[in-house]
Image (tube, rainbow, N blue to C red):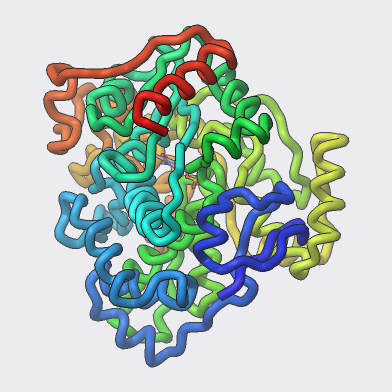
Length: 463
Ligand SMILES: *Cc1c(COP(=O)(O)O)cnc(C)c1O
């Protein structure tokens, strides 16, 4: 399988090339040049499989020779033994709705499904190539801990994660700083999340530094992350349909950077019988406005009770745009140029109809999030986290939706307490965090301080 860029400026690469490249060297996002099709017979057979066995079947045609099948089987098994639920992503009935629980991984959020896999893929490919990778990222909370959990203890990989000192929740901070593996380097910077992100961006733009230190990113634009997420759409379908290809189901997806819902879109393109895909957004509704009007226009970011979805520009949206405009990189480039210049872009009336055919969308306020957590708790005795509550509320009044549960409610206990006056019991991975030993460097929010720390730390590992 070959991968191409949405902007057309990357020579086709294989799966290994796409994973190690991350962001396309032309600034675009990588996509498979063809979408493998799944037959009705395969759907029927796969509906009996465990999550892990199903993931192998789905990923193999995308991975092809880059990872031989027997190695892929082993890699996927190792990626999901870290999950605390036997089914990995179990489907539970809650009142009228079905909830697909994606939060049983080591950091209690759905990002583990992708990042446990990505960490092992990196390790495998570096082993093959004899290379090394130094991951650098800034986090406001969730992604940092999931990325650290994905690569802790791995040879050939060091990870540096910046978080704003004192500005992430105590639990989120401890999820990162209690990881004591020698290859994990937490940096608390005396500044904001935006300062951290700016420092990371500047260091990545210093191409000499980037090359010399083999810097890489783990943000949601890596194709391997999307790939891992396709698997649970097939899994949910199999549990419900029992393999009957006439059974179509719909998904409601709490959406921020568009990675999760894009995986659902890929599943549908592969032939999974999906009826509707519902983009559930919080007050930051750029995507909902796009689905309703065909105009994609950025605005201010508003902080909400579902912070992992507080985004202005959805980084994976470009992948969908590429398909929407008929896989024409020149059109993608023109629309993105418009976006850069004016902060907005508009698709044609015809494309707008296609968007409405592909997606439904609804935006949910903080007040409605709290109401939904209360309602689901009162009626069904089930506690939603505020992100999942966005998806459940967006789907309310519609029948036969599977709502993706993207975080464990104990991870967002402030919002849960505000809604129902109690907290959800924490899963094992969140217990006792405040008593554990921590390791973290504190640095000024300056590019030089962070650059110096990275150089010194790598020199000390004999780099
Ligand atoms: C990252 C995240 C989301 C948004 O997922 P995208 O793939 O960025 O759309 C939703 N909920 C939680 C809890 C998250 O961590």
